[in-house]
Length: 301
Length: 273
Ligand SMILES: Nc1ncnc2c1ncn2[C@@H]1O[C@H](COP(=O)(O)OP(=O)(O)OP(=O)(O)O)[C@@H](O)[C@H]1O
Ligand SMILES: [Mg+2]
Image (cartoon, rainbow over all chains, first blue to last red; front, side, top):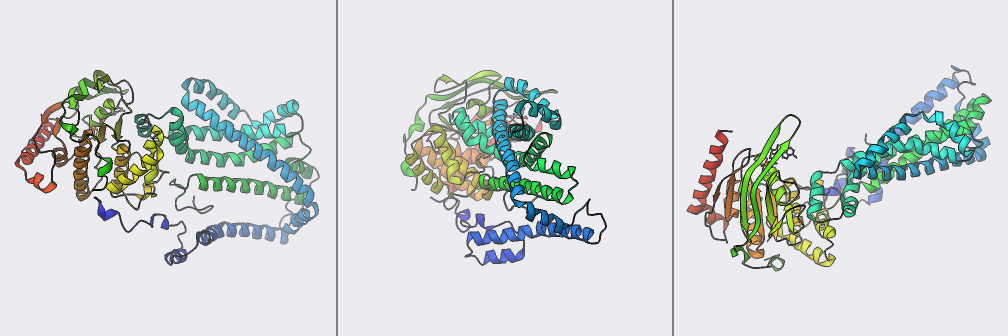
């Protein structure tokens, strides 16, 4: 018996067929079919990234123009060429300092993500725990991070520890808030359904509640990862003998504008690369979510 | 017929007369800051093993609430419910529940959504997979096994929820407007299918519906409810044979009489709303 015949045949292969890119050229290519998936997504990525690339090129052009016309003295805004020279001359050291900051950021971010999710789970499952933890979290959030940095240096010295702790402190809050919102966003009927199936709390968490929370959590992680960079750099400002924050302070002390700019560019690159990695993670874990359908890195909102 | 092999547990069990669900003096109030809603008032209902009871009533009269109380998902304010002689104090595991909204996991494909039932219950995988495939074929979802809920029509989503509720061959099936989002034709076909499933499995079914035709065609007993506070105004037993062909049943004078009576009851009850 195949009762509702009219809906069954025909469409079977098509659900995934609509892809993100809205350009007609791409659509036409897709219609022709037989395209390998990789080729399709490469095309889509190209169509998605030309706009940001154009904006970047435009900014670069303005920068070059401003310095080339001598509108601003070179000790305030160095020319792109001068910054490039710094990159070439100082590359080994710059790379080393970048790796230090990157490491502090990544370790801090990962710790914040783990701690944040665990805290959120505790808060969602135990109202008593929530009442006692929430004020603490709020306190940790409102206290200016730059103000605790010196204390952390006093306690933990000049090594990586205070920077990592600062990155954790600053990245923790968005993770907790988004994870709690995500875990709470589960449809109560799904929980009811689960209880008619006699499922344990753990199974319900693993198969229903946690996956439901992922879209919220991923947004929180995106915010957190960019904040973690700030945390690490602030830590380096206060007391460090390596890392991009340390180099930035040195450069500013010597009024070395080209080096300042080079460091700023490296910091931005760290932030952007980490952000894109989290975006990639998001595409992998929640391809099904509304925010991800028909969307590509950099393309959507 | 496809699927018959898995559906032939306890043939003809629906003639037995021991109550499997007993609802007594059930009242449910919802309190909010400003007001109190009495969703159900003093409802008593006893469903025998193997019966197909349909519940018809105006929107907001507490039908969903009643099903949820029977399933142990919502506590009663007053009164009691027992299933197979055991008082209901918490969520019931031996039932299959089809929610009014299909309540699917949006990250799982059709087949995996159906198999959630098996995973949560720790059922044998091979057995569950084979049964899921049979149910998919039975409900015309073939070809969509891996489609995600957002790629399905509302009616298809409801069919997935129905398959999920049937997967573990429950003895009691509680269904809350399971065919509400289906077009008229598919709905008729699903009704015929439900009638067959009921006859062949002997499952006790409690089904809420807004459609008078569906209520009469499916139920061997039809419970008509009044608007808030929900009360049972009348119970009808048209006495149609268990096996019902769709067309001829529609023409049956007993069908027409029961439908007419329900329309009058619902119409009358709406007039003093
Ligand atoms: N959780 C709740 N909190 C407050 N009021 C509720 C709650 N659930 C139901 N109600 C109220 O109880 C009444 C009955 O609701 P219920 O969902 O059972 O109606 P229904 O008969 O299933 O309606 P429909 O046919 O539209 O699905 C409604 O007035 C509704 O507002
Ligand atoms: Mg309802």
